Length: 176
Image (cartoon, rainbow, N blue to C red; front, side, top):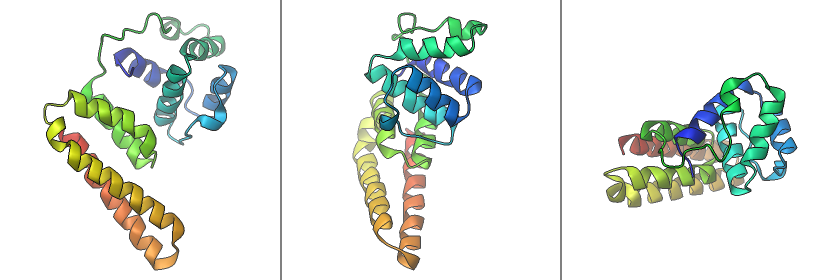
């Protein structure tokens, strides 16, 4: 579902509504369950999560309508609706890689999976590196879970391992 038009909408909404309070308000008014959203302090990532959820719940038009209600004079926003979003134009692979890297840095690994699958599918070397990505993803998940259960120096060590694993995964994604 993620394509060039949705990416443009994401960046435009992040410019208009960069604060998470505004994003939550718009998402709630559009009928999205706020409890299901993965919150981020970075507007661009939060908008990715909101748009992804809106697409899954078939509420993209409602979300756009609420944003238009708040910015009726915005011509670019007026051009978006789910019918006009061109599903044939793929989002730029580098944009997807950067977004995926940002989401991983934020620790929102589940939200990164659909993007990662898209990147692997579209990358010429994706199938060769898929197993390595899965192993790194599993390591990140394990380090995160273990760190949540520990304290003190053992927790600090695991958090360093987690950051190192995230960096390795991001480097691998950028190499695709």
